[in-house]
Each structure stands twice: as structure tokens, then as C-alpha cells.
Length: 449
Image (cartoon, rainbow, N blue to C red; front, side, top):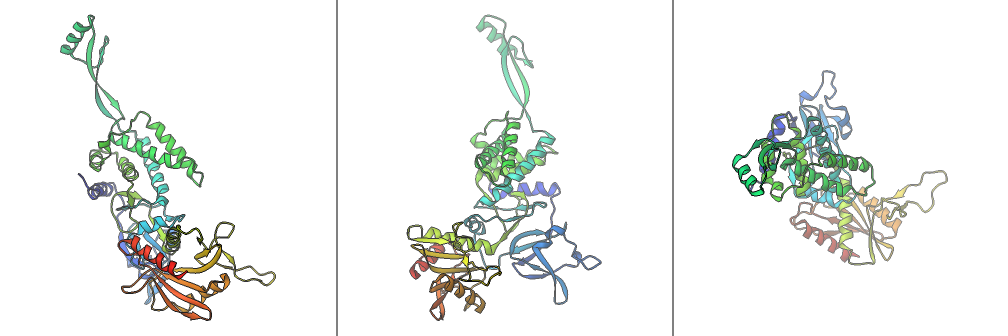
């Protein structure tokens, strides 16, 4: 049995042979400032980078040297044809893909104009299905342009008009049996109905079933593209079970004829779709050649933890977990910051990340701070969350941080300001198993209510 890692190596070798860009990687973390290699500096002092990636970091100086200050985006950023910036998370995160998958509704930044080779991951992200579909449709367009691969298949037939090579012994037996001259002949016919095309067709059908009824941006175009692909594959049947194995797909890739590299990419994506494998946001591999994906970890952390709490409290109908960044009309809990605002002034809003209600009344405010847990919350963070507590009338407020050092609890009482109790919330995003860590945090919050 061929492992996925072996298939990854096969794809990678063919991608490099086909001229896929291999860039020198500059390692960094979110918000970190890193020195710029001399090769990235033009004679006029400006950075030699693609113009459309400049908004994802900030050129600056560090120790009187040109440098790049990373933003809060995690992932692979191509800088030019020779260099790329690989931005890691600022706190340890074990299963990043799982965390992103829990951030319901989050859409990553996709650098559509570029491509990179990805490693595989266990979790397939719904937010990346559109990217996989777009990549498959683009590969299929190249396949239509070069022509669908076909093979010669031997066909034996009986007829009074033989086609191809006549089989004399079989013809004599058949004629004697039926009592009239009848020929048995053998011929080879070209057909697109074989393994690689069958795998691609099934992937198209699988994606098409997902897009049925979707009306969001770009979904109609994707659906029409998949329908067109299915029409062009109308002479291709469904694959047999053995044709869907990693072994079989590895063999298809290795046996592709020259000048049909476009099939590599289609088979890469089809393999991911049919096996429900995901792609790893971090690190490099060769299981898929897709546009780079950038993740705003602060948004993912906030959204994922809100969903973890909502799932954890789903057994109590009195409890609701709401988003303070969304209006109440939209199902959230955002409110105006002031009871009365000066006439003519723009109304500011209180926007805590998580508002927990009991029987429709706010009982706990949680504001997510995607950063390592400090010994004590910062004064500015405390001021912000206490204001939220005052506005919502909750006496307990939590500042939630994205790490839990050994020996520390899920909730720690930082202190009191008047009638408001301030707590530090701690959760280890690198914990194994992650489910136990999440359950422990939910139980700690439940005990506080």
C-alpha cells in the first residue's frame, strides 16, 4: 500500500520537473520584524517584491537595516520569484487546520495569482473547498485544451462484417454453431474511459453535489463549470473501488505520457476531494499545488472559542453564547457604548468577542486576546473588558489568552475593580488531545456562571 507521503513525493518531483517555483524561505512569526536579505533590495533602496503582496506586511528598518514587519497573518507569502516569507503562529498551535475548521464562517485570504506546494493534513477545511474547486476547474481547462487522455482497449465482436483482425478459429466455431457465416473479430478502439479520467469524473460529481443550491458569491460560476466538466466526461464511467486507492493514483501519475503535466494537478485535487484529506497551512509538501492561504489567527481564535463554548453549553437551553461584534438584529449582542451620545457625534459601540447570556440576560463577558498568557493581564486589556462589563451589566469578565503554561488553571482571578471581578482565561492550543483541553475550559466557565 502506497502511503500518502509517497504520493506526495511523486507529485513533488513532477511539479519541480514542470518548473514549479522553488523559493528561499524566510522564517518569521506573526508581528515579528525580520531582516531583509540584500538580494531583496533594489538599487534605489526599495524592496524587490510583488506589488500585490505588500499589503500583507510592512517594510521598515530594524537596527538601521531594511526589514519586514509581519502582520497577524499566518502562512506562506511569495515575495518574488526567489524568496518567500513563511509566517508561523506566535503561540504553539497543534492542529491548526482543526482550529480553523471550528471558526465557523471564517474565510482565509487566498493569494490567487500565486501557487505553492502543500503538504497533506487530516482535516479538510470547508473554507478551502472553493479553492480546490477553482484549481480543479483550471486544470480541467488545460486538459480540454490539450485533449482528454485516451487509451486503446481491445474489443471482440461478432458480426457478418468483421472489424479489425478476424479470429479464424473462433469464426469457424461460431459459424458452425449458428448455421450461417458469422465472423468473430478483434479490434482496438480509443476510449477516454479509464482510471485517471474516472477518478477526475467522480471528484467533479462529488463537488457538484456540494454546490447544489448554493447561491453565494462565485458559486453559480463554479456550479456551471462543474456541469460543463461533467458533460465533457460523459463517455467516462464511474471508477472501480481499486482505481480510487492511493496506489492507483500514484501509478496514474507515474504513467502519464509526456506533455500531459496538466493531469498532475487535476489528480492532486481529485485525490484530496475523494479522500477528504486536507492541506496543511504550515510547512511545505507536494500533495496539492494551490494558491497560498493566509490565516488571521486573531479572528480564528475568537471565532473558534466562541463555537467551542456554544457547543459546550448546548445542553443548557437557558444559556446562549453570542458574538458582540454582530448586531442584535443579526443574532449577535453588539450594543451602543453610551446610553446617550452627544448630538451629531458618531455612535461608538461595545463589541466584546463573546457574550454569555442566561435566560436572555448577559451574565459573562469574554474578550479574546490572541497572545501568550501573561502573569497578569495588561492594564489596557483590563480597562477594555471592565468597560464592557459595565455596559452589559455583568459583574464578571474574562480576558481569554491563547496558551496555558504548565500548572496554571483554565481560569485565574486577576483581581477586582469595584464591583467587577477580572479573570484570566487560559487555553492551550497545543494540547493533546485538544478535545480534553476544550472541555476543561468550558467546565471552568460553567462553574463561574
